[in-house]
Image (cartoon, rainbow, N blue to C red; front, side, top):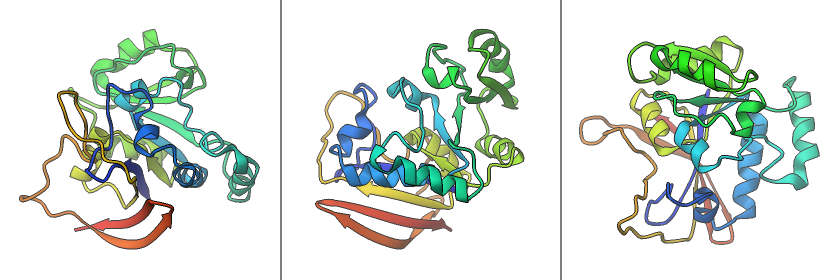
Length: 232
């Protein structure tokens, strides 16, 4: 199963590339949003992020105990009872291979999924702890190939935390089973600076219909927490 987790404003902004930790700003520093994210990570075998998300959160670890430390012990126990390692694996998808080798997550042993063209350069530049796997020929990582590599390593539940371009690639290939979407009460607006919507780089309507079935709605204050099962 592949699930995706995102937060967006009322007016549909999901990422502001020029703003560090824009996801936290968009979420309005919601404790409930952090709790949901921590729980999803605790249930995941691997967390999948794009290179843009890594650049936006250079100190990110994508561990389950980081977003909501108050329940860290309970989340570790959940993973133990499910027979999972203490932390989910972290997989970074990059086609161009432009990663800063000083990112801590690379030094902790992240898996880098890239193209055959970029793999050699990345192996030479990244820390030895990081594993580089060429999953696709050509200039772009095929998202289906990337997920197949992860499943081949026994990762059954995959959590995509973005960004919008990676989500667009996954949705374009019908590779996402469920979407957990936090609707923040904020309005972001759009000016000259680039602001990204939930799905970037994939054109769905009118040529392709992809709809979600609403599974649950939860509320915490002025935030809404929506869970959709995706299908045709």
